[in-house]
Length: 259
Image (cartoon, rainbow, N blue to C red):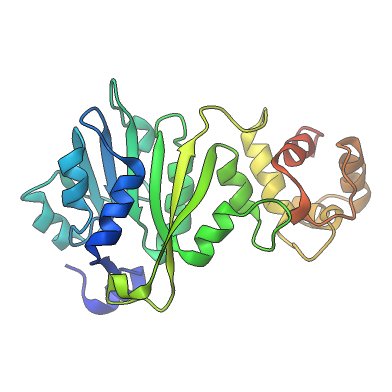
């Protein structure tokens, strides 16, 4: 098992509030037809309620000692959620559901890998640091809207459902947490022909968010500023705007413009 220092480095804070655990399980309402995958079951506060309602349960735990403890009662594997093949999951006749109290230090890479499995996973209930959760759920034009918002919302509807105080965990973190409820859209919110290009454009646009989007794209994509302005004009977008004002549809038009 990891020692206390290593746990802190990984951002391990174990849920201990049974009421919060029930509320998270209720967001997805698993049925006997569903497969539920739990990321980071830790000491098992969520594991029992989830496994009791699901047709099949699978847990991924990075801490080998914790995985061994839970494996006596549940199908919990010692595995890294950052590299797991979520696209290989299936639930014939039911849904693939994912629940996780994501370690703060690993939350973003796990979230993006999960979101890439939007054709496999139907819904997710994910606990994140509150500031990260707010960025994921942010609409265009808001202060917290950014690249993470755009890339997640392309394939998922996002609801900020629960705020969780530090006292719900052991040891208490120094920040608040929040639970996101994500539902796969089935197909992209806007047509995107080349998702790799779309991602590059989005990340470049937000790479220097204090700059006008034309200048940010020029710097992020290593283009002449005149080329960036031309592509923005072709997409019907004012190059003097900031990236946080652009909608998903405008980012899709921009990626299709040849940047």
